[in-house]
Length: 499
Picture 1 (spheres, rainbow, N blue to C red):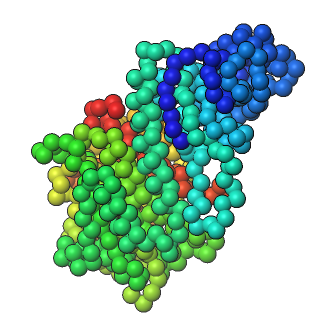
Picture 2: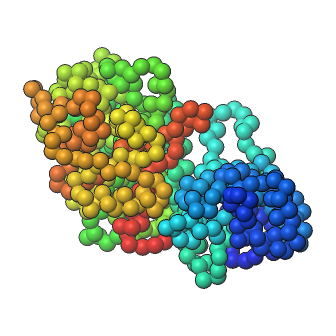
Picture 3: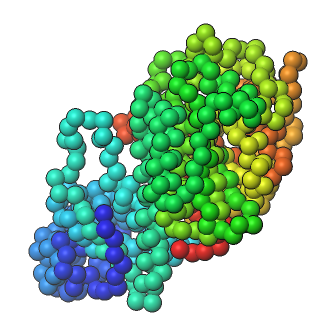
């Protein structure tokens, strides 16, 4: 979809459809009032008849509204004005786009971007409109022989209205940022939705190479023998149960100075997780193809970073393999030696994500990073604690944690700061090795982060557990593309540049 930013009166827009809002109870928004005045009270009469009451997500399509140049006017319910915040705004944009896709209107002027949203400016509203609109139109159908669900004539062009000419430049920059975020999310969603027989570690490596070629990034893919030389015994122990060769992807955006320390993003890339010898239940195991969503989000964030040409050095590290049971697979009770030299007793082979991430965190030391953030669908405990709303955040540096919290609030891709106290480390004690790979049922999300923290002592580090937020189950099952928006805003803020 193409986007443009425009300042102008809604009744004068010569487009297929003009979109304006209605608050509860039956109160026209400012842009709707302008159309109502121009049309001699046409909209007010509709509200009086009870055809639209302004309930959140409701829509009403009108044709040939008097004294307007647009072919249609779409009324979108915004709910109560005093409660009109981030979620109702995004829901209203989503409802508008989905309705427009069904009408056959291929272009529209959206005036919802003029509505005030508490604590957010015009740029935020424009960026969110772009991200939500493209997310609403996302379809994953490349594995289908028929594309029956596609709109016959989907929305192709959208004008995003701003209240005055003085904010046009701000709006245009926000649209560019929204397009980059949406492109990164699409890449992450496509990878997360692909089945495990297609999206293998080798496939991820090929995607990284293609991304590097398209956007001028540098890429290196380490093979099994390279990892053996580095001593990545923990990572390789997970990979040995599968016939698919493991890959360790190093992707770099060099937008900063040569001496500038990079931000390192580490993404868990388990392309299918059966649980290994500690086999998962069969129900819903198909969803374990999304266990590489951390890797997908790193690729998506780097794509957006390159599109925005951020003046920042960013390194993406992706350890990727499958976790399958075989005669070669890890067994409960096995002890492996990590790249750091620390030994790990594997009490549960289904706690494999931390076993591949720990070696990646040790590898990150060679970049002398300004900060390291790992992203992983790590624990079912995080889903129980936070559901699919907030990502779990733990960090060894409070300032870094605050950066990520702020970025998440701005992007509406929120996380929640959980403690990383030394008291929890006690649960990882082992009689036979330096540590166990699990700490029991209590505080499972936190003890997983405690495990990783033992490999991240030489730099500022944060961990994002996206087990609940990277995927949605049920009727609309599929990848969400999170936390790409959070990561992009974090990197934009780090770059100190509003693009």
